[in-house]
Picture (spheres, helix red, strand yellow):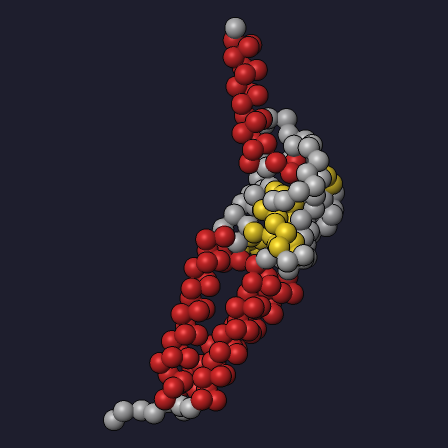
Length: 203
């Protein structure tokens, strides 16, 4: 009876794990959504979009970017002229566009059939040197690869896990991440400059 209970418990663990990471259950999935660890892939407008486990942080960042942009467009810019309002719309739009280009792109997922033995998932603190085997994804990780404990999948050329973009930054979205940083920081500088030098000051 103890053996039966143990087998039943192990089966429940496997089923719970499969529900959390269905892409690695060995079942062919041609439809959408698809799951790579905790990253959900959907197809929209003919493109694949990848949404990470911290999607709610991306919504918060969207509100921050939109709030700062809207504050400038509707409060500061009207006192400085129509050109400043148009500029505010442009830089806010660019900030949001580059942000979601990074948020929705494949970070560099290394897909494989999962081979899980029911044991504890090992923690990986540093990217692979090219010889490490991931016991979760059942692959020999190429150099620079790391199995993210949040995304629960191996990421090629892993840089870091960014909650604000909902998932990891890796080979697939690193350029988009730096593009967003440059555009966003430039937008903040432009808004501050325009506010200080063009907005009328009350004495």
